[in-house]
Image 1 (spheres, rainbow, N blue to C red):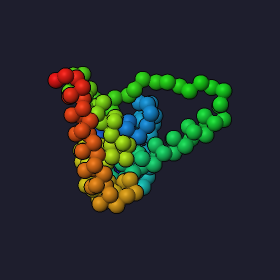
Image 2: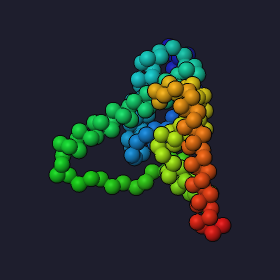
Image 3: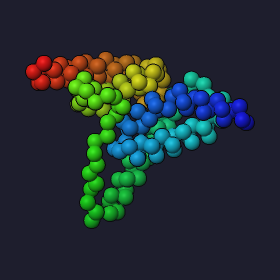
Amino acid sequence: MQRFSQEWREWLDRNGARLMLFARQQTRCEADAEDVLQAALVRTWKIHRGAPDQQVVSLAYTNIRRCAIDLGRSNGRRKRREEESVLERGELVAWFELPEDDTSRALQVALSKVPEKFREVITLKIWGDLTFDQIGKTLDISPNTAASRYRYGMEALRKSLEGEKVGTGS
């Protein structure tokens, strides 16, 4: 049992930052992202009790997405019950822990302009290091759809970045 817990710790050390990035993208604030990630990791561990392998990463992304959907539904129900409360406005949470320079800001702004269905595929492909097959399973789409969303998303990101560069006078 001790060996498994050490393997899970090492697995989390290797994959935790990428999983958190995806959780941030799926939620509206840092606290929700942390809660979603924790719930997803517990689900993942309960399903896959053995030593973690590459399939566990894909399962973890799937569980993050599902936990974020569950959280969104729960929040929606609570908002309907509490109609008199004012909607909370929080600070925009940066998806990336990047240095605060013009390039990083331009990347964050450009990526925020890319439609969500493309943005999540880009995140899973580049920062999640998943294959299109794994992305397809995570998002419940075909691998071909994942690949085309990646291509369209990268093109939209490229155009958005060009617009930022032109708009800044650089």
